[in-house]
Length: 294
Ligand code: SD4
Image 1 (tube, protein in one colour):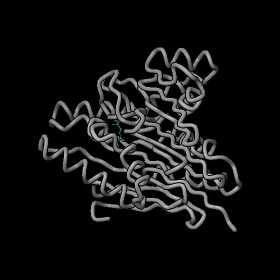
Image 2: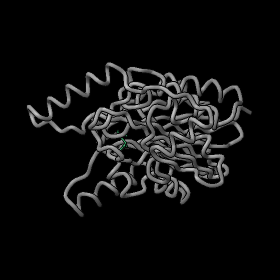
Image 3: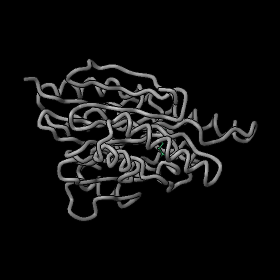
């Protein structure tokens, strides 16, 4: 009997990482290593503008990164926010998930700890990202364009053959954010959640709004009450969007992917061009584009 395994991630940019994670999982490696491998692939690639090396800077031109790791078996969580000049924030987050105390660190404290642990120091601002920043600054001043458009987060869920699940996220957050701004991606229950007894979810979009509904925890909770991943993803996203509109007239972009511990997956979005990357025991690595209509 072939065993279930699976990996699903937000956006097309995760495809290479998902393919590598799929090989690991197929080879009976564990969920944590596969999730972290998929995310480091994205962090290391300089041309993805919103994650890791080459990520877009804050309004002062400084790259500040958020990342988180959760082990769905122990519910251990590690996270960093607004961390500067560290090559792979996801590796720091994973290391923090092994700490009993101080497992969510921000800014200077996070950086100091990471360097003391031997994590690589690296200037994460590429020339390309800097040029993009200068252009956006001009557009904001000249044409009144929103400084905040253009931001994607990689969120990866993995299920291994022993039915263990993990989730990992990494992002430079909102383009042109204020120094110190933190989004949903490193926040448990909002940007990510994993419980190997049920499933896992991860989000991308406007962190300020995703956090209002603890969307990832909400999706896992709905799967736990018997919904399929697709039902859980859709109902949670559209319920949150309705609440946001009813209460203050608008909702930012909300997109999610999720998977249960049988390898069934779901995705939902409020935008026109949300892509996600997926591979399971039954599905060769693929990218799907989805919209509000599915
Ligand atoms: C944030 N949710 O920092 C992230 C950004 C993102 O698509 O995912 N954008 O708010």
